[in-house]
Image 1 (spheres, one colour):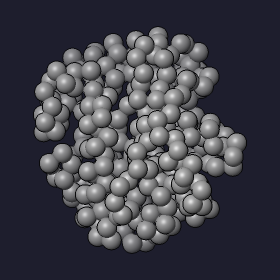
Image 2 (cartoon, rainbow, N blue to C red; image 1 turned 120 degrees about the horizontal axis):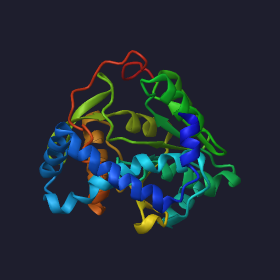
Image 3 (cartoon, helix red, strand yellow; image 1 turned 90 degrees about the vertical axis):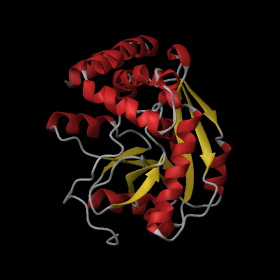
Image 4 (cartoon, rainbow, N blue to C red; image 1 turned 60 degrees about the vertical axis):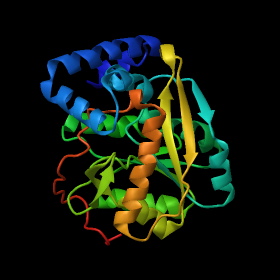
Length: 284
């Protein structure tokens, strides 16, 4: 599988995105469950089918672009709001980038590493280890590069995040993932109860890090990506339920910038499952 990924990594990004769009529509047509979830989630958020139809193709592009992002040459990157990072660095604090399942979330961390690793500013991204051994190995190898480290969603991985923040480094988290049972709270997301992470707020409270919102827009025609950065306007509440609501509201605001690139087929409202690889809340 690694050899296949590496062979695909040499293809031009426009071709990969074209293949990915076809793959996205094929998956949509073949899976009634996926279609129902896609339609339900987008409708609950207040969108009509015509407003989010483009997300079907973007879901496929997300898969097809991975070989290039993991193994290929650097992709073209534009920045929107990069001064927010520079201001955070000037404060001497760490940075917590919060990114929803919107656009290309892989490219946001890579773009940061390319720009700031030469300045000694590294980034660590939290990821959930794949259940299949071959994919777990592939993800672990491909996500480690100069200035970029991947930390698994385990107790050891969380300790790595705390250490990175306390040393003034950055980390990236997808807070609209459903955390394991006992590691989240129920909070509204687009008006529906969603089991939501408490980890980002706990990390920020412990380290005093700056929160920045980020997402990577796929540019038309496979011309690359634009990393959009936004400030987190309010100070996080000390209450887990309220801080989760604040973060969910911030993620909603990013999704509304470009709903056609959000993963509406993601099972955001599913029931959490137990995971003994992580410790219960309050143990950090």
